[in-house]
Length: 304
Image 1 (cartoon, rainbow, N blue to C red):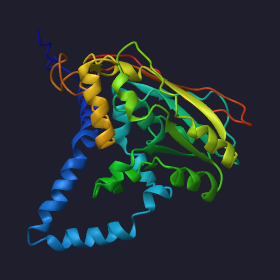
Image 2 (image 1 turned 90 degrees about the vertical axis):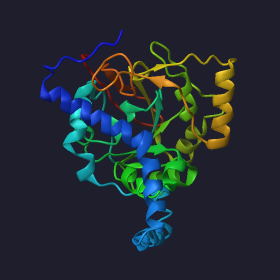
Image 3 (image 1 turned 45 degrees about the vertical axis):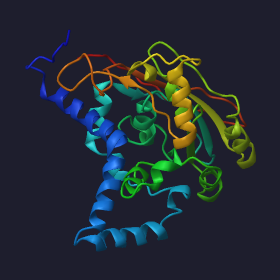
């Protein structure tokens, strides 16, 4: 039976829903729309716009692996605070981070859409810069998304960078100190195991971030995001099931995972692509290596 939202929902909650809706739309459809717009313009009288952008794109092709192009104004948009309050999510400081050091944060879990990682590292909604003055967070993302016209420029504004050694090396060695590079250790493949009440860490053959820390003298900081896997329900895909075999094969071909998931809807609570209103608690645990500690935490209360 479909459960609909009451008509008397406060405007504050409607704004929270809208904020999350635009974020989900951005990561599920905006990239494809940007490709469509870029291609469409080539066959209209505005073809020059695509040609000029393609020229800029070529000249700027290395930017995503050289620290990206952070825009603090976008990271501070009010819409991210509404998104934070939707779950809600918050960031708790457990220790100081020395701005004279660089850090590599191993983040877990990925979840379906990595909402906790995005809110805490790619926006100022949880007060990262206030809690850790002098520390500049970066979050690695699949290289594929930085090949999408227009979309690449948008995601770079939040501090997203490519997930390769060159990108990590630039941030940890060529951009001075006070940088925190977050790597979702399980990667996109981990999204296939994201389901309520379960946490599966994919670590085998994924220890390159430890080697990077040793090479660049960066401190390692483990981060765990409680509640991340509770935001969506996923179709059962056991490791030996036909569905999982298809998903694994598609990931090898396309480079991205395709979990079959659902959450709630915009105007009803039973089915849709909106995440459930569930607390996201992201906590960083200190680890001396050689001297570090990273914090985060989120507290929340659910609701419809």
